Length: 144
Image 1 (cartoon, rainbow, N blue to C red):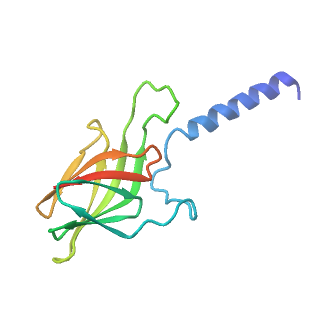
Image 2: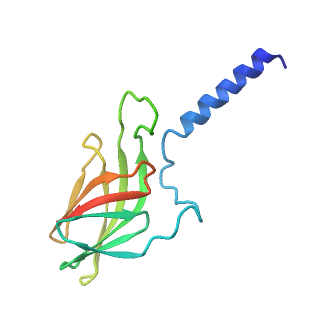
Image 3: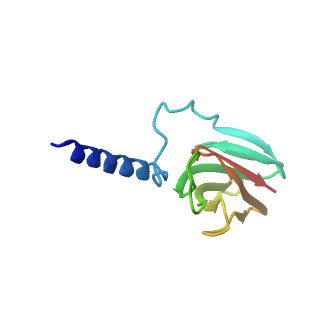
């Protein structure tokens, strides 16, 4: 194999590899052992922001409501140190429960307004996605 073909092949491989790393695989669970397991439930005062790790749940004080961050549905956001034409958005899934009544629903919230809602209502409460960490491992929500 000549040097020119080798360099061209290496360049093509690099382009594909960088492109594949530009978005989070949808619906994939976090690899085992990649982080300390989150505390299953945290207490959150109503009206304040709470940051949840993937798989973690917030029990809202004074309300019959829990909010669990279940997965990253899609993430087209520009990665750190990358130059992008469009910033992109993340879509996250949450499980909303009213334990006392046995009611539950799922919600997909978006980090920006272009592709879907940033907030939803459930159990006489509003759940709003405030921010998402660069890797999608943490989400900050405001529950009011």
